[in-house]
Amino acid sequence: MIMSHIFDFLFKQYFEYETLDVALEVIAIIFGFLSVWYSKQNKIWVFPTGIISTVIFVYLLLKWGLLGDMMINAYYFIMSVYGWYIWTRKVDQVNVTPISRTSSKEKNISIVIFLLTLLFVFTVYKSFDKWTSWVAYIDTFTTGIFFVGMWLMARRKIENWLFWIIGDIISVPLYFYKGYTFTSFQYLGFTIIAIFGYLAWKKSLNKNQQTV
Image (tube, rainbow, N blue to C red; front, side):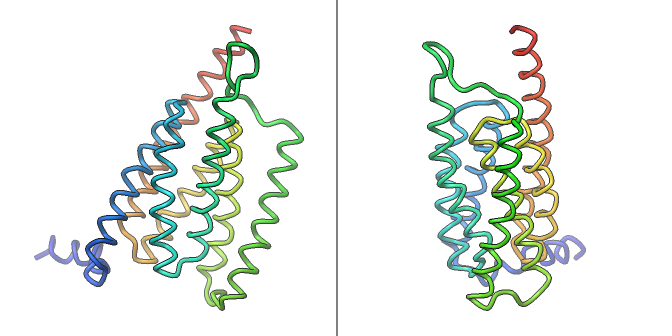
């Protein structure tokens, strides 16, 4: 009986969804996990797996009317294509773009991206009459965080993980509140991987600096 109540509490919202949508969400989550894992491993597969996940989520989130989340995933798609290019671009005859720290110029660009994202999301929410609860404020803030994090990851900057960690922690209860338990669990997993990703990239960066 207790387990039944727990199950209903966590997953009862899915009873109203189409089976295909639930299946697509699970598939998107699996590829999302693969993408974050490959990012932690500093592998180029972060981008093709991420593209599959984001395309599915764009479709689902648009269908569910979650505009802020849909825009995040549409942006991820664009940044995945950009990141795929950056990560494979050779900086000399042998080496591709390495892990590095954010420069002062990139920090300023990050601030601009964050502020422009807040303005853009606010405008979209107001235009579609979605600025109706405190959730819109949190959505706007996390969208700004994730936009910066994705841009920094595409640039192969170690600080990207700090933005992912903050955004993921906020997203765990947020998606649960919205009724998307699977996605909430996904962000919990993302948080853990992001912490280890930061440590792995930091170790790699320190090793490269010592070698130089």
